[in-house]
Image (cartoon, rainbow, N blue to C red; front, side, top):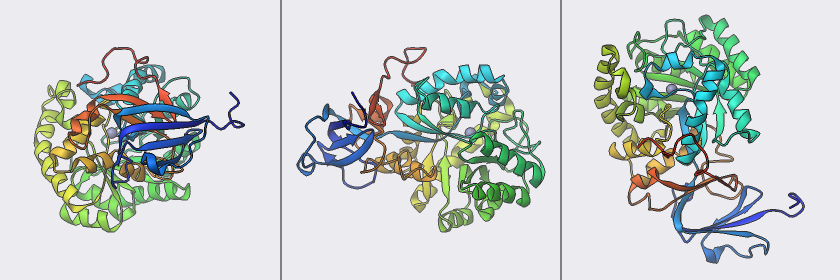
Length: 409
Ligand SMILES: [Zn+2]
């Protein structure tokens, strides 16, 4: 087949089309795709003339929604194995090999785009290229390279940057190597032994340096921040997103809304028995932090959801668990549609890829998934993804992976 001369058309038929815009769902909705890009969507009566040579993909027993976007994850880490930072310290080769089954779990779970929030040795950038070159199957990756973190901060594997000059240099190195965004660790975190959650690792000047470097290069900063002084600095200095945000207070939430910033929730790692609980509960400092933070997160996100703030979600290395992430949002009070938007339209906006991804609309890449049950009736249907399409091509999710389990449920 001569691509380009004979345009490749596909017509996708569904039982119900949830296009990810948050608008009305479409009974028996159809998608017309040309060369991996959506030409048109609508009910059968609205589709007009369909090119004769269009390949018909009959998914009329299935519920179709946009490919899911995991807005915050890593590649080489498996939280249940314990000591995540030690996992990131492994040599590049090992890190890449460890990443492969995780990538497969992601695509099998319906994640067609994933934003990678820090790896050592630029393995995220090399893996991104390997996926683009079709050496391996996987979600399209948005990458940040090496995380920007202070010597005494949370998230230190090998790389550190202290003072505005070192922060600038590390940002520039990441950007030169092909980073799509800058990830900075500002406050303490749950999974490290030596930082409390209200610890603030960076000064105003250091956060400002990262934001300025990113913006001059046409991109943005996503900041690991739970709350307190660190979150204040991030909000003042204009980072794009607060990642995790366990302790965002009322005043901070107001500023986040006013400045049109994003909050990216990461719940599975904290709440699922396969997460931090599985192994790191042996470490008393971590166990205490997890137990205390669970209650706070549930209450805080109920408030965040009600506030209407920009909200996306990420599995934070709980590969295959994006469905559980959405279930958590529903538990905290989101509607099923709001949970879907947090992993589709809103995630695309948080990651600044909404021009191409996140909804099933004309001009966007034809990334979509098919489910046997209606996720608007029961969000748990997202746990079992039957078909995954990336840029109009079906991904053979049965034929990939090192084990037979489709996810960790
Ligand atoms: Zn993370």
